[in-house]
Picture 1 (cartoon, rainbow, N blue to C red):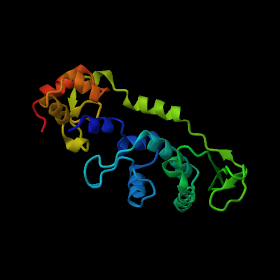
Picture 2 (cartoon, rainbow, N blue to C red):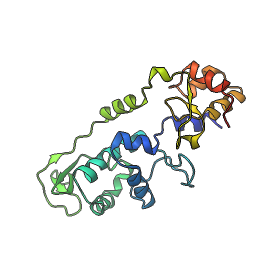
Picture 3 (cartoon, one colour):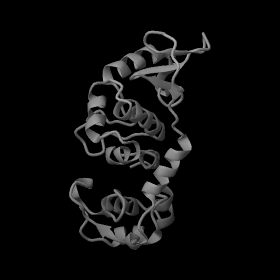
Picture 4 (cartoon, helix red, strand yellow):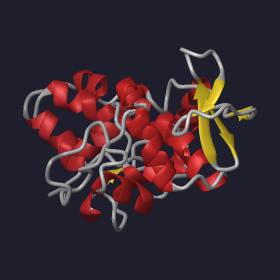
Length: 214
């Protein structure tokens, strides 16, 4: 278990977290992944493994916009695929950094060549209201989601469907077995906290002392 791998995981978001933060359902996320419409930045090749789909913060911003387009403005998935293909030269930033507009369930943008608002697929000029998604708001949402109930600090819990129903640090999805593995490799409490900044010393000590972890 490398420090680099663990730090990557800390910066990632699970499907359940993405659904809570963006409004895109887990079912939609998996369908979009299978069909290649939106693939998680940190997905494992074997999608049958637990936490095999992990999303970056940039993914969150993109999916928030896609939720507005698909689920609130009812833009068809077929049209969104056409938009993605047309703007493919923008790469992964197509949804997060392109100022998009919606009119009659069609997506438009500010064409840098013509300096006009145009429907992306047809190139027709439009007059529409901009889709506003503020990255800062998403950061605030992430912080709110990660804020734990103080009564859970230093506690261990087991919940069906989380970490294969194995013990985790209460209020998180961090398996007790992972913390114990770090400790067994010689990591100090402070070093483990560097890997998992959201955990307290009490959390880590509770995990290390827990006897029922697999």
